[in-house]
Each structure stands twice: as structure tokens, then as C-alpha cells.
Amino acid sequence: MAVITSLTLYPVKSCAGIVLREAVVTRAGLMSAHIYDREWMVVDAEGNFLTQRQHPKMATIVPKIKLDTLELRAPGMLHLEIPLGLPHPDEERLIRVKVWDDNVEAYDCDDVTATWFSKFLGTPCRLVRFHPDAKRVADTKWTGGIEAPTLFGDGYPILVISQASLDDLNAKIETQGRPALPMARFRPNIVIDGIGAYEEDLMASFTAGAAVIKPVKPCPRCAIPSVDQVTGEVGPSPLDILQGYRADPKIDGGLAFGMNAILLKGENEVLRIGQDIAVELAF
Image 1 (cartoon, rainbow, N blue to C red):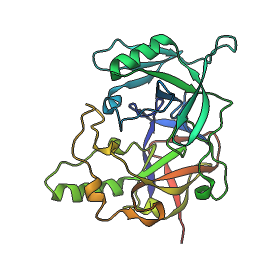
Image 2: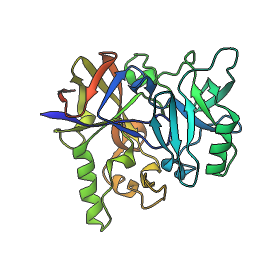
Image 3: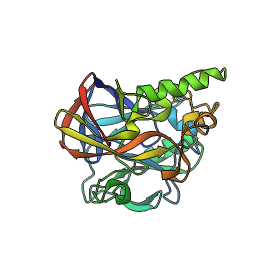
């Protein structure tokens, strides 16, 4: 029986995730305590998004959802408290930001927050929050014409990986005398056990309670899996291993690991660790 074994919410793009026992699944991705996945993002002085690709130490910025604030902690820094409530229209500061090919309007967090991030990352930057009137949707070429909203994620609201896929990769890594990698290196939202290695590639959908989730596009991998998600240090990349067997012509030869997914049915269904799921394969 296939089962959900991990649920992770990433409130701030490219910062540490929050491991959850349960999460609400929405069309825009996972949500907990009314906080959405990738609701916040760090941008440079021109409004371009920053990630661990350029600043691997972002992995060590650890969020915690509190009653009224999102708390952020980072090595050597005083903790930062960001209000969870949206600003009053008379007090909001808006900024145009760019994430990949999309330009959207966002709330500009305050100067104290900008100073905190700039000091820690060693470059001028600001923290922004997705504006409820902004619109980003996944590429409809992959979603079959469905308009699937996403916030500041790379392009899709949900990332799914099977435990067997990581086990298979780690078996290959260990034959090279290198240490196995934890799942956190690949930053999935949902981890599934009880299916075969890379069987997520073959799913038409999977059902968890009333939620029907459809994997739609293989996830092409960049350098981020080489970043230790605890220390922020860059080590050996698994891309050389993946190159041998996971180059996918559907994504122009990109090295696929995990599947980007969208929600078809069951808006606001609660997903839980240990929950059984029903898998429908695409053949």
C-alpha cells in the first residue's frame, strides 16, 4: 500500500522547510496555519529572486510559524519576527519582482527585515510576500490546459518524490564511495513510500482522501541538491550520477528527479503522515 511519509512546507523560497504532521492541500500548494508554500521570497536590488543556487547559506535560515508571526533564525543572527497579518492598504509597500519569466506585484517587507537578510547574505536584498491579487500559473502545456496557481515556487505548486527513487539514487551514490543523501536535499513537498523507484513518473494521479493530485512534469535538477540543508555548505553533486540514467528528452535532456504536480480535486483537504493513497498509473 502506498503511503505519505513526509510533508514539508517552505514558507520562504530557498530557505529551510517546516516538516509537518499534517497539511492542507490547495490548488496553490501545501498550506499550514494559513501560510502557503513559497509565500515569501528574497529578491535583489532589482527585484530578481535569489536562491541557494547563488547563496547556499539560505538553507540555514530556519522558519517557524508562531501565533502571529513567522519567526526566522539564522546562524550568528538575532531571530527575526515577521507579522503574519497582511498590511493595511494605507500602509502596504508594493514592489514588482521577477521569478523566472514571471513579473508580479508583491508586498515589500520592512527595512529592518531587508537589513537582516542583507547582513546575513552579504548582499543588498529584500524579503517580499506574494500579493493576493498577483497571478502566477503553471505552464498549461504541461497541465493539460488547467490553470494551476502557484506562488513563488519555481513553476508548479507541489513537488512529489517517492522514497524508492531516493533509495535507488543513494545505492548508486554509495557504489562510488560517497555518502547517501537525505531527502531534504531535493526539497519535496510530499514524499510517498510503497511504490517503485521513479513510479511517480508514471502516475496519472494519486488520491489521498478527497484530494486528487496529478504529477504533470518531471523536475529538472540544478545545483541545489549539492547544498547541505543543515550547514549550507556545498559538497559533491548527485548530478553526475543522475546524468547516467535520468536525462529526460521530455525536458530537453534535463536530469529528472521527482515530479511537479497539481491538485485536480479536493481543495482544502487535509493530508497526514501515514495516510494511505491510491495510485493510478498512466497506462
